[in-house]
Image (cartoon, rainbow, N blue to C red):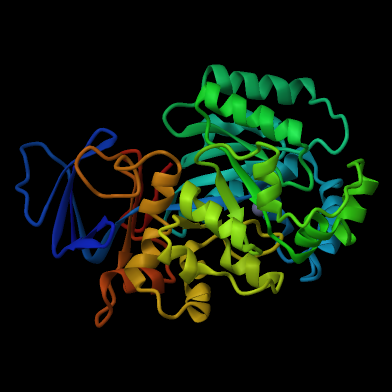
Amino acid sequence: MLISAKAVLLGSGEVLVPGMVRVLGSRIIQVAEDLSLRTGEERVVLEDSVLSPGLINTHVHLDYTGLRGQLPATSFPAWVKEILRLKASLSRGSLEAALCEGFGLLARSGTTGVGNMESYPELLLLADRIPLRCWWFLEMIDLRPHVWSEEATFAVLRFFDQPPVPLGRLGLAPHAPYTASPELYRLVRDSAQRFRLPVTTHVAESPEEWTMFWEGDGELLDLVSQAGRPRMAGRELSPLQWLDRIGGLTPGMLLVHLNYLCEADWTLLATRAFPVVHCPKSHAFFSYAPFPLERMLSLGIPVCLGTDSLASNDTLDLREEIRQARHRHPGIAPKRWWEMVTATPARALGLRGALGEIRGGAWADLAAFRWRSGLDPWESCIESREEPLFLMVHGKVRKAEGRWLP
Ligand SMILES: [Zn+2]
């Protein structure tokens, strides 16, 4: 297939105007300003459009897609209590519907890859029906002894033995320092290295989490202590420093949030190259302290964007995340924002050059957006409020000529 567009974003801030991309099977095989059509080759002409690598949402909980608008913007511990109450009433059918709706919302915003935190492992039985590239991060909490159901165990073992290649991948997600024990973090670290699995965790999200670890006090500590976690004394340790002390940091671990940091954390981040995931709209929902994005970027820390779930957001659209975040960080160029949803997450997930970029040899995950006159091509993509004009995942066309394909 030969795809031509008014502009092609190659990744890392480079663009071809105009540009053509040749796809064979699941891969991009050629990219140039001009390529000639081969005999028998299908042609796709995307008028007035920018062809981009498909977006990658590095942090979402699709299980909670059905909870949109049901939780108040309140303190984090109060929100946790409320989501636990709502989760208790979710049926298997509503969870499956939430998952399917979530994948649909992602596709309709130009997203082709997603890191989904999965707290119901039995839903992995659906994984081979999912049309987007998905990292299924098994969310793990061990406040209390907990035994998985036979179905959940079967679903994960089946996925592990026969992953739905090429779009499904397994990952591990100890939930957070306040809900996962040191033993669990270390087990995840060792398992991830043995089986070469990506790992992510929430860390340093809320002021209450900071107070729990630094001062050994507060509403979040009370909540998790009631749920079974041993009470702890204050150690003047940040949540990230605590993770490091217990040996819970896996190399390459995607650290989600990092809203509250001490100087020792900055030293750790500057020297050990952990990718960071920032969720701007969820951050604003909870009115957290300003996110230190400029400092992270100036230190070369790889920053990816995620949406978190619809329990603390009203969208799964990364373009909206950027539009919101730009008000708080106006000095960052559009191409830099676009990297945070394409090339940087691909690298964070271990796929440098294979995803998040348009180049020969990369997988053909592509999204096209309308190029508005007067805007640069990255700005046009960010400001686009419509569905993508064209969507391809792993070489398979999902949307073209105004129609979604099965
Ligand atoms: Zn989250």
